[in-house]
Structures are given as structure tokens and as C-alpha cells.
Amino acid sequence: MTRDDALRLDAQDPLAPLREQFALPEGKIYLDGNSLGALPKATPERVRLAIEQEWGTDLIESWNKAGWIDAPRRLGDRLAPLIGARPGEVLVADSTSINLYKVLHAALSLQQGQRKKVVSERSNFPTDLYIADSVVRAHGGELVLVDSPDEIPALLDERCAVLMLTHVHYRTGRMHDMALLTRWAHQAGALTIWDLAHSAGAVPVDLLGSAADFAVGCGYKYLNGGPGAPAFVWVHPRHLGLSYQPLSGWLGHAQPFAFNPFYQPAAGIQQYQCGTPVVLGMAALECGLAVFEGAQALGGMAALRAKSLALTNLFMEELEARVPEARIVTPREAAQRGSQVSFSLSGELSGAAYAVVQALIGRGVVGDYRAGDPKRLDAEPHLLRFGFTPLYTRHVDAFDAVQHLVDVLATQAWKAPQFQTQNKVT
Ligand SMILES: *Cc1c(COP(=O)(O)O)cnc(C)c1O
Image 1: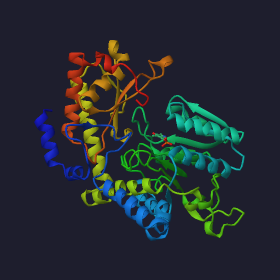
Image 2: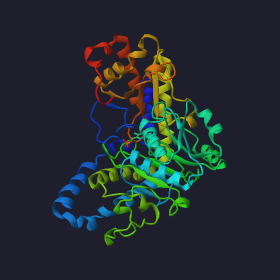
Image 3: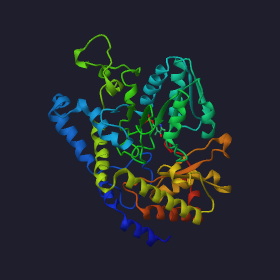
Image 4: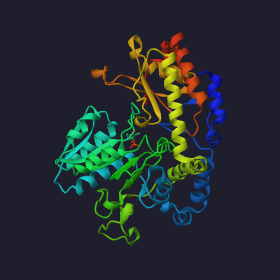
């Protein structure tokens, strides 16, 4: 592959026009949309309208007039097609951590105390484990963590209440087979919770087709909702009305404006709302979702997935050909990877991952660093992580990013003192 080949792929790319919908800084190669998605050009004007007109002028009337009160359901309906759900099944609210708390409680209570074991991966995103630990304690249950997905089937037994997994792994980018694992869990009488933080907007997801039970995910990653954007929660319709989430706030009440002193849960997914929605965050997220609706005419999620695989494949092939120190941890098998590529550096460079990422950022190539486990660095090394959002990443970006890495290593630019001190957010 030459740089001209990459440019040719971009010239032939039917999704290329989507990049125009994002305000990307000139000269920056942004490969961190898996952590904070880029800014859609429509967002500033929409948020300005929400502030100046809806808030500033219309004030409290906007709850009705601008539909603020319905935003969690309206955005949920717009998000639903991206995750294989139907309108009316998804709610946009709170954060992923909080939504996980709700659905794990709901799932455990559906098991009526008969089963108390929650199975997950030790390398799952820590907030998922922290929340699970807390919920499991409250239910007198047990959190069982596996070191490898291969250990999961043996744990799906008559004591297993819930299998709680992140669909695409935040460190490695490895993707689980949602339909298969859900089937195995159901055969054992267990329920499934899927965290779609690195899936929604990145890979096609089929929650209903997989017969999954519960799902949560982020608004600020591949959905481009902006920093701290509200998250989402989905519950399979067969559980709605039977399962209850414990954060019984007034907006999950059947009649919030009856101001009744007794809680009566709303029907359907509405019960998963707790309090007042973050209206400004909703306005921004709606612009992120609109980009996906515009992409529908260009082939939608299927076309985005094909491009994402082409980008991650190009990046991995160039890495393998030109950076012998790179140890790629992301699966080469297309069906087993999301939309990111992660790798460690071998030998003398194994401790330099953070500094190398900083040196790349210094050159305008933005990825991120995920620390390994210092006690088990062989099994869990420090990683350099690069996300490939197919909405706005070009083939030439993947190509140039590798060239920059080659330069940073060859010149040892990463050794400069300013790249050694760790920031609060890595
Ligand atoms: C990003 C991410 C989160 C973030 O949770 P917040 O509550 O939004 O901070 C949770 N889980 C996974 C798997 C993630 O990747």
C-alpha cells in the first residue's frame, strides 16, 4: 500500500461526503472518536437555539413547546435503529454507569432471588465492575469474573442470574458474538446485559435479533453527542412491566404531574427515567444521531461497518509491515473486532506507550493510552489505542498515522521530557 493507494480509496469511498458534516480541525488526524466523538457542524447552532430561544426566550414553556419533556423518548426512538431495537424501547438518560445500575438491579430482581451469580470479565471496563459489585452486594449475590471468554460457558449454570458483558472490549477492541452468548445464557436460564459503549454507531448491533435482555451504552463516543452526553438504556419488551429499576424518580412515574405521594411505575421504558433530562446535552446528542440518519441513504450501518473494517485492516497491515515492535492485540478476524485497533510495543519500548501516544498527539495524531496491569504486564500490557470512526476517518488518515508512528520511533521523539508526565485523563 502506498499513500496514493490510500488516497484512491478515499476518492472511491461512497461515505466520504459524511466527513463534511463534522467540524474537524485542520491538520489533525483524530483517532479517538471511541472516547469522545467529533463535533457535528450542526451542533453549535442547535445548542445555541436551545439556549437562546428555548431557554432564553420561551423559558419554561419549552418543556411543552420545544418538546424538552419528550426528548429522552424521542432520542431513544432515533437511536433504536442503530442497535436493532424498535421505537418505544430505548430511553436516553443519565450515564452508562447509572443505567447499568438500573438494569442489573432489574435483571436480578427478575430472577427473584433464585439465582445470585453475575458473570463478567475481569478486564471489563472498571465502572461496569464497580457498579456490579455494589448491586450484587445489595442482593446478597456474587460477582464471578473470568480472565478469558473461554471460561464463560462453564459458568452458565443453574446458579447464574446474569451474564453482563461489554460487547466490544474497550482495551482490545475484541467483539463478542452477542447472539451466541445470549443463546447460551438463556439455555442456562440466565439473563444478559450488554454494554454497547464501544458498539453503538460503530458496528451493527441486533438486540432484538439476538434476543438480548438489557442493554446500555454511551452517547459521547461513536454517537458524537459531545462531552458528558446522556447515555441510553434498552430493555427487551418481554421484560417491560415485569422488571423494575430501583431509581424510582418522579419522571419514571405513571403520572408525574399528578404529584401523587405514592410511586406508581410508568408503563414501558419510561420507568427507566429517573429525574429531569439534561436538555442541552440532549440537543447536542440529537445532532449526532441525525448524522446517522443522513448516512442511511449511503448504505447506513452496513456501509459504515464495511468502511470501518477496511480502515482497521489498513492500519493493522501497515503496522505489521512497518512497525516491527508493534504487538497488535485486536483480533484480525473481522467478526471478532469492533472499530478500533490497540497494540503494545515490545522490548525496550514496552514502557514507552504513554510517551509515544503523547508524541503522536504532539504531531496532531490523536489516539489514547490505556495502562496495563503493572502486576501482569505480560498478560495485560500498556496499550496504544486508536479508534476509527467510519463517519469521518479517511483511509489516508490510517496510512499517515502509521507513518507518524514510524517517525516518532525512528527519531525517538517520544523521549522528550514533555511527553513523560501523565495527565489526569489519559
Ligand atoms: C466509556 C464506557 C463507560 C462510561 O461510563 P460513564 O458512566 O459514561 O462514565 C462505561 N462502560 C464502558 C464499557 C465504557 O467503554
